[in-house]
Length: 240
Image (cartoon, rainbow, N blue to C red; front, side, top):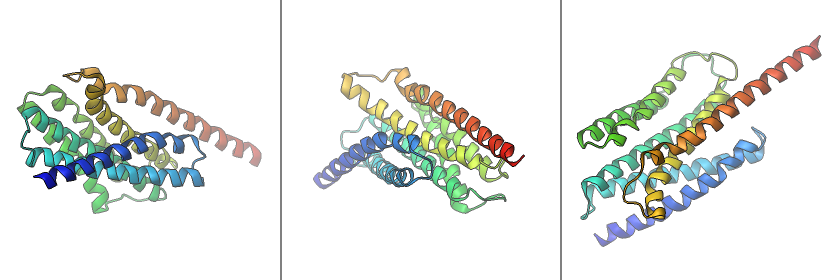
């Protein structure tokens, strides 16, 4: 058991350090020139950091469920939530990478892994919601429905032809933003009670990262849509 606890501590520190690193550097690729060296290098550091966050979260959640001698119904519920957030963040990061890698596709995409990841997100979201209903934990019942929505939207993108030439750009941005929102949500749910010495996590804490980040994502999408439209019009005018 001591070995398990020591290993849990190691993974906890890996989780915390990589989590703070990913949250800190997330904004650098957002403000640096897209496709530039800084964007690519920092972007990959972010992805690796998020991979460590997800792997350590799965280990800690599993340990809490299976091996923790002091586990309670609440601690197990939060452990399952931690695992779900790991699936949500990692699947979003994977999606963001793959749409970029396959930006030139002109056919329906049916790669087993690229379809399997959103299917896992859908199934885990549904299972988490049912579990939350079973243990009468409303937030665990409703919050994971986000996973169903995202998983379905990812499948829809892969199983349909791209609607417009730069759709991959916005899908890539959305995937990385979703990954960050998932990480912020986990930090808010698990970190806020400890920092503020709270016994319960208020409803607003669960949804605050989404409430704050979603308008930023929408604003950036609108900005780049106008930017691409202006550049396209400028090239057209120059050709006249």
